[in-house]
Image (cartoon, rainbow, N blue to C red; front, side):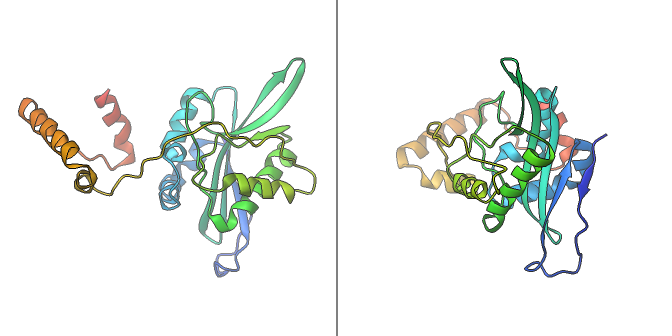
Length: 235
């Protein structure tokens, strides 16, 4: 069974003075108590669904074979300020074995990642992550991509490498193409209001046709334990 390890952190230190402390979880059992905090942090930092607890956990169920889990969390006092769900595996370059660390979900499926890190601590978080993976876990390579361009992760990682006292160097930093981001309004009515008159009429017409042919019912599933059963029902 995996563990959740952390350094002892002072409970009474004011947030502004609290040190940056890293915790490491190596199993989903150890992470289960942090599920709600994890997702609240991802949402609050405006990260992506691809780095939510359930997305990473279910991805791991299907693609985690032969890999080791290292979920890195950083706190100041009791406040979560950074989260990098990492994994390590051994690959072969001809006869030479290479130990590589990657973000969970960064292969086998097509996604673009926006790691949840507070901007003020991002450079220190990446520097500490590189030290943990390269020095403590003896990885030969860390791949932190593909990254979204919404946040300056490339800048933070580059600056972190410069401050790594020679144990890490940036080997490659390149554009991998274009991805589209659509910022949706908070409600469906606000979405319709932003459409042109013709498009709005088309959507309304299609909705009326659907409601005439089918019994449309909206059901909200807001309990984590109900999600898998609801998804199976949908499928």
